[in-house]
Image 1 (cartoon, rainbow, N blue to C red):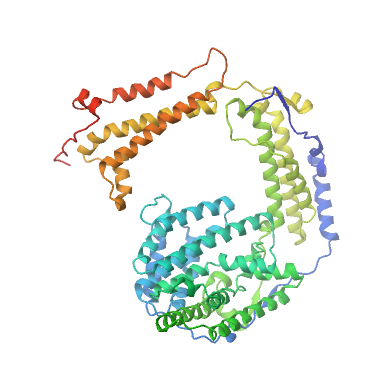
Image 2: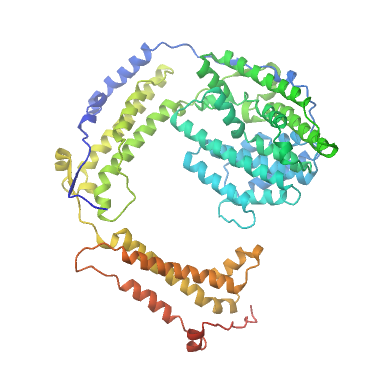
Length: 609
């Protein structure tokens, strides 16, 4: 990378006068102007309650419960709590969730081992769903990678994360009796679940409300129901061919069972979350709350009717497959009626009022959490982005002098401030007291933007003692780059360290195995690959290749060292360290014989070990 002698940074002057925020004497004016905006807005009194459609009467499937439900529920919660770090509040929510009851109503005919796996998975799935609600794109991607790697490699993939152990635990119990097609569908639908959650997190962060068709398609995956359909096959020991499971009628039955999305609205609206069918319909069709609830309720009833119609159109594939399909479709019906009644038994949607809501169908809206309003969230994100991006610009000189490449030269710092201003203009109205508090909070965010910007020039952190001059001219003279902190020098040092470490591992293996020690890479490689029955020599060759790669990488980096003049032109010390460490390691047994032949006779295992 070539550096110029000087760079021009962005001009902070246009932002110092925004909204009169450069001086605290304008505090009252700004608050009053915001409050005036609230008062001038045409405000319709928001609803306080709505009435649910009568889905319980419309669904005439028989409700049954598995006879093992109490035992499975107790053991599954014990499994979830083992080694956890959940708060008392989280544990209370899990008890109120009643995932064991849901499982027992959705898989009423299965044996205890299968019910226990299904119960563990559903408890685990709700845990994942709660985690994903608080995650951004990066967080959902890392969880997805962890879970999918655990499913694809249940005996080989290792991570210290608790999710890794939980995933492998229930899936290993599922593998012995699940058909290959069931396992494949389970993993594929889990992948679809994480893809949809990732997209939902992206939409939530950007404030995007999808259209109804896109939302229904996405929600069929974010619901997490599709992996549960695969568990119907597993729990009932079904082996249904792929071409049968992919038949349009079978697919339509699964979609109809998946489309009951109405009960979560109250909780989600209180968080400001718009990823709910009622919110989508209100946004897309301009309906009020009750009209949107009635519209979605009619869609739910149509889904149940469609399920019944499709059930009559199932083709025949022969006695054996027809029997398995009948069990599978009954399992989907159990899911419809079981999840419907569970929604009122659990505290997930209606807190402790589920039975009252089931009887009256009247829901009192939960108060909306003010600071979780999307507009308020957007203001905080815009302020954070502007702080982060301005710091990236202002710290560039100091960091490049250290060879630090973890810095971006952003182009949208001004856009972040503009987005902040735009969000200020569309802040909703609550009560007069809340409006005033929000105005003070927003003003505080603006103060952070302007204060941190000016502090950057007042401080010696970025510009030493020349901050005021740089603020006036916006021209920064680049610091000289520190040679030994150049990324290429770091790469050389890392390669030398890894080479020495790998060499020590190879040469110390004999002594350590004689003591019964396993804290060496070679035994670890042998242990991790037990399924492939790898022997000692293969493990030694594997670690030896790591040594050679480190030396090769050192040599490649050595060719790419920049020039800083005749005084600093070569790096000999690191190379001496590599070769010196290598030759000094011939210190066991017949030194000359081992060095020439590379054959090591294993020491006998100590009797005390």
